[in-house]
Length: 585
Image 1 (spheres, rainbow, N blue to C red):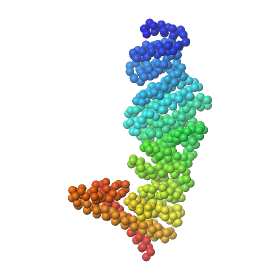
Image 2 (image 1 turned 45 degrees about the vertical axis):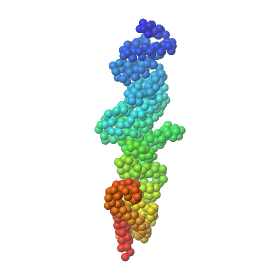
Image 3 (image 1 turned 135 degrees about the vertical axis):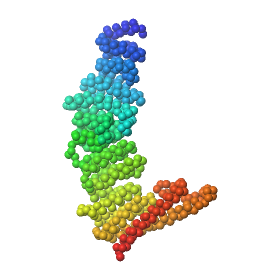
């Protein structure tokens, strides 16, 4: 359209309030042409001219998508485009503006999510502040759209990655905090009216979602983050601060689950997501000590542990490193405040107290990350130390029946020895590790699980700890009788008799294999290749490795190590038999 024709149309628009679809189309085409040609100064002058305000108010919102794209490009015209946007969000229909801006958020380029959020959030904020009593609903919609996009951004796993902020998560989190501040302040200043109540609900949902995404996956370090600038640490502290400002009780959220009394009506998936948020909140509160100043000190350590076990179980059940590490750290901090030997046996009947040790064992056995395996063992031992005598006795029985892993069973057997030693050396008497109760535990513990078919190499850890425990108890009972000598000797004799049979069979078999291997090595290379198809070395399972697939040198070492292990077991058996025999003479 020629310039004089457009001027005639503009003059007509200035004299009417009734704009037709073709007028909207013509307005947008003219505006888009100005933007495309970089003539945003002329467009800005038109937008701001007083005589054109009713035109812009009616048709200007359609320019938003193109203007937002220009601002994100950050070229020479972006400043004028930003000025146009700032003017449009102040005069156009708030409903149209919000719909268009939220659509822009949802349609963000996957590679430019952070840039879109940084540009769009101030505009959405301006629109919401114009919405009066309807702003709470608009805020809820906006936060939902924004958080869906933020959840798509990768989480940095190191301080260097956080500083580089390649994908823009840190910028986005900082922008979101700025976005919600006016609404947080409004709730703080006017917390009794209906609008403030609805704003509080929207902000509570925002905080809980933020705890789950991204904070549940963020690596936080209080000491490091207190000395270096960390946008994600700041985001975590501000989220917890917002909860305090909007007067949400942290104990109520953590320990008394329903949020707004509606949790019984939400889906199982949403309930799980809420528990993830609470788990992260517990971690921030008890591990990173964020918001501890607003958390009451009236709760006893055992109660806090009992409540946190659900969150610990959830975190340890996850497969990602950051969640498992949070679960381990939260478990440690929850246990540290509990007095040693104080947790009653009744707690072991609660589902989380049954599931958490199982998860710790799974991590110890199966986790591919070494430091998590090591830390889970430390936490497992710390949990044992907090149980009272009856609880330890019950817990040891449970693990011996359910773990089916020689390494874990050896830990339990070693703990039995430690408990007996502790209570024999101290003035404190614990009947659960003395007398008939100890004998009952030993009968279920000092056994070969598969009888004479037990794989001694696979169960080496358990066998060695069992022999050490028997030797220790026999020596202690011989020197200071507590009335269990006869029962103890019976257990020792039954165990060593069956163990000798297993040792004899295993030593004979492995000795034969070692001799065969060494004879084969003497054959010349050519003869060995010809004979290998007919006289292959029988495959032996040793700690999940097939000897038949090993080089000859490795097979030789494995077989020698097996025989040395059997000799060590046999020496302990001989020592136990000597102790019993000496005491009978």
